[in-house]
Image (cartoon, rainbow, N blue to C red; front, side, top):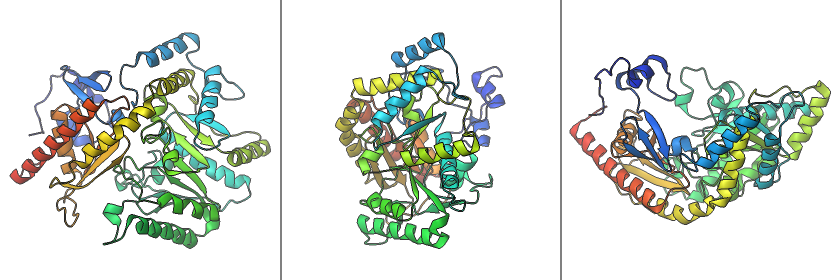
Length: 465
């Protein structure tokens, strides 16, 4: 029912897309058969396809359009900057006012004291930079063997060669020859999926912490440079950490002098009901990676915030080498920085964090209202993040034999009903724009219920995609 193999008109946008565009995270052969959903405009929480059909964008684009679509003040900020200084760089002692102001603003709102800001263009680049900084830092301290990086199974930190190695998802490693050496992965913090029978969340957290320490000791603490973690795992399926998890993890990192990098690319800028996920879970990282919500996804921009000990080492090593040999053409691009500054103003003026705090209980109650559905193994979430992990057997938590296919069916049933959600494997996820209303949330939850019922009916009828 989903697979329309009717060839599009030769000069249509769909045909042109198939002829020239490679789509990320997409089954390329399926796309060649079916073509794209062509979105032509957006407004608030809504986007519209080429035929004018409206959809609630229930995952904020890619977790990023926090302030909704067609926010005129962001467009105006970009336009003003394009007229004044459309492009410039930060290389070789050059600067411009917008990069300076944005760095000041970010340091002022950082969840823990930070010393400097390095600008990049995406979450992948931010995490890639943090990896390089961990290596640079240890070289500066005369510890060339302290270079291994620990991520977590299920974690997502980007898709470059280094950040893709840090990512703990097999689908992003397969046949790309990843992960590279030096990259390790600790346990996935999903209590529902990996907890032992009768094991409480706190006991599970203690087991994961013990396993992390055992991994560090096995590899040798003198070889471990950094540990990366999202406050809540996003693209790995909206995995909320078990109770007490980070309270146990952080002392282990300090004990063995291992840098802690918080990946706030998804969780930052209000999504969990605080400006940063670090504030929700009491995290005290050495570096923080931010992106997506920094500009509400309107223009590419990201950053790494580093504390004084990282900066001091970089400063000293640069003096020794004569250069800090890292950077991107568009680091701190003036248009991107101008849009980010306007976004920060809007977060404050629109009380975005307050809106999430007020409506998160509504969303979370809605997410959990589908927990009893025959296909739902676990319904979970926090703030404006939610997920439904779909299973073939609720009692045994058995996954489906063709990973991702049932999630895709549910995603497409939502789309057919005017709500765009995202299936991550067989976990259907939602992350509404942070300007969403109670009515928007109610519509998302209602459509998910309809889509789950339709997916179950398809499975019983033997329908495949």
